[in-house]
Amino acid sequence: MNEKLRAEGSETPFLSVVVPIYNEVESVERLWAAIHPVMEGLGRPYEVILVDDGSRDGTREILRRLASANPRLRVILFRANFGQSAAMAAGFAATRGEIVVAMDGDLQNDPLDIPQLLEKMHEGYDVVSGWRKNRKDKLVLRKVPSKIANKLICSLTDVRLHDTGCSLKAFRGEMLRRISLYGELHRFIPALMRIEGAEITELAVRHHPRRFGTSKYNLSRTFRVVMDLTSIRLLMKHLVNPLVFFSAVALFFALLGSLSLAAILHAAAARGAELAEMNILVTLTVVFWAAAAQLFFFGLIGKLIVQTGTRKTFLQTEQ
Image (cartoon, helix red, strand yellow):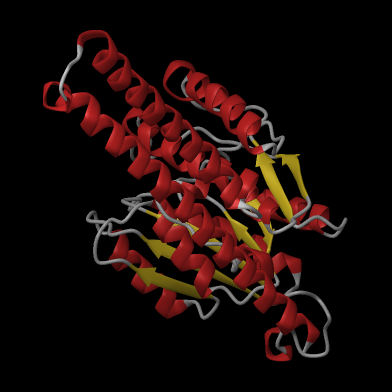
């Protein structure tokens, strides 16, 4: 870490706090009023980055005013609403901290938990994830879907956390800035960092009921979450050798093509049918075998990319 980011004469790590915000006009000033004294009380160099995800309710104007009056506060303003993952990705990319803390901007996370997260990080962990042990949300709309999602995510990613959906987390900055976020991947940051070799733990944190505005979560996001979860599973299981995965899928399609060909040969032998009479089966055979060949070559290309990246990393390490 550049020594300019350390306090003069101090070896304490520079801290960054990232908060994505969307239509929180009633909360944003209270949020800053809650974060600011906690960070000042730590006695460490820090920055707070508030990322506005295209708010249309006056939040942006308040953020500009707060940033102009507080040199520790940095603001990123999106022209349109791109989603929480995009907002968090922009905030993470802008951080300079050796430790990065992420939290929600709706006042349900408590900045008073930040010192405890940092203490846990000092035990040698790369990720400390908040656990809303006494969650203040509606049972049917939030708690039940969250419990189901937790079970599914933990079983598929092998990252054992009680609360994967809690935004209050602390990360090792160097590792965090190496990952890419898109879609709904902000939910799977611990899993993405596990791919990087991160040591992960969790800590029980406070959780407050929402006081202002409305929740931005709804069941319509479930499909996107499932798709991203599938991608995460693929990355975690087959990142080192993608040829194994693509070869297995290619073998499945090759088997379908063989079954289709066998049906053609059987029909020709039993009924003396002409190929013209079995257009569908002929088409399926060609499509299945073509898909098998493409998937196999995708696997080869993926393996070459992985090996090239691994060799490049090794050469950089050697230098």
